[in-house]
Amino acid sequence: MKKLGLIGGTTWVSTVDYYTYINSGVNEILGGSSSAECLVYSLNFGEIYKNIELDDWDANLKIFTDAAIKLIHAGAEGIVLCANTAHIMADSLSERISVPIIHIVTATANEINQAGIKTAGLLGTKFTMERDFFKAKLSGLGIEAIIPDEEDREFIHNSIFNELGKNVFRPETKQRYISIIDKLISRGAEGIILGCTEIPLIIKQADSKITVFDTTKIHSKAAVDFALS
Image (cartoon, rainbow, N blue to C red; front, side, top):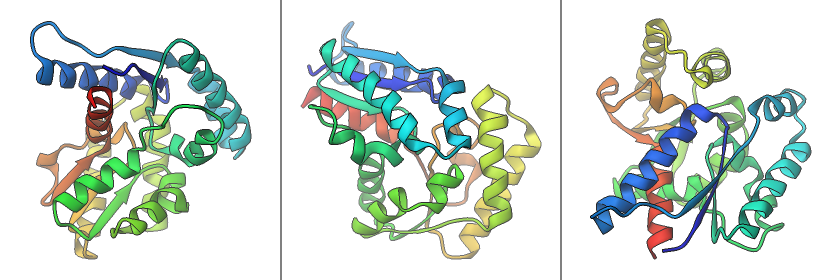
């Protein structure tokens, strides 16, 4: 089994799910008392968020690089960035480390392609929805991403940082998400990407008329596949 290095804390709420899904995934395949060999480096999200507000991704890249190198020195053979938005730095981070990064967009695109879907609604932070690091990689793998309008993007972004990432889940927030999903369906979305690892904490498959792609579960499965390859 390859040893995984998880960079979490972004936020700790969803990092808990990564740890659960990866260990249960390994156990499901190997059986018995088996679990994953993994190292978790949980960052102080307050520091990360301060840099996000300043749009200072170079500062965050330095933090993530330091964490990844420490994990590699401890024996990690593959790195898992436990957040969608963190993948804005994935290519740059990959150039600075000696082991592969298990990429959340690649894993998600593979699931979408297996479902035969070509157009998917993308929910996430404003960085994930508006910048190219997520949409361009999807496009390169044959998937068109459509995003909510500006007002809905602002709502989603704020709810992630002010509610979901703090383990706060309000019924009215869930209803707004469902309304946003319905709008994307009306614009042609065949599937919905829950492109922030906190969104699956409030939105489930039962809340959507079409297939939702839980990036936390998908990414965790890819990490298991890597570890057992």
